[in-house]
Image (cartoon, rainbow, N blue to C red; front, side, top):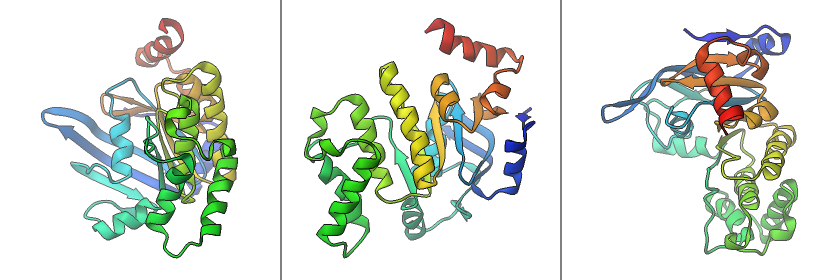
Length: 264
């Protein structure tokens, strides 16, 4: 049974806001292994939703389905009021331009400079941009992530945190309405994690995005999440504010909290 904690006004009011993502009775399996089992969740305009869960619980599969990189076995997924069921390739490609996907490994092209990496989605998707317009877009987005000085560097010359920032910048350059972050703080030192968490919040404020942040990092969840939803056994069992979710007495919640803050 899903435990919903919408006790404060901030979250009860979200029922009156626009839904930008709607997931109903979602199922996804690989072979005989069930990954998502009757998963149900909504994302509201202008919020950061954190999806928590241990490794292998289906977090990354969920956002790959939202981005159209994987197809659901059953259920319905709507993104920006458009169903992904039986969507045409042309419609899906158009929808993807409104979705920024920040991959866990940043997914930069090693043979391209930072500037070339950022130019790539513009040149590929927007025709007839002038050189001046492209340069301005690259300059502006690099300023937004605090890495204008890295414009001529190669990915191999960047730190892990810098690669994360450039990966986020490459998604922002298309001005997406939705951001999907896959483990944004994974593999980073504590100070860089703080910087990435701050950047995620800055992106929401500056670009007015709605976001899903996939993580098993509770510090990240607490710092960036307007709302937290926890995946157990392929479905959402708990959701609410960070404080509301982790006040729950369910032993699965306690073990997840202990795993993050005691065992590590």
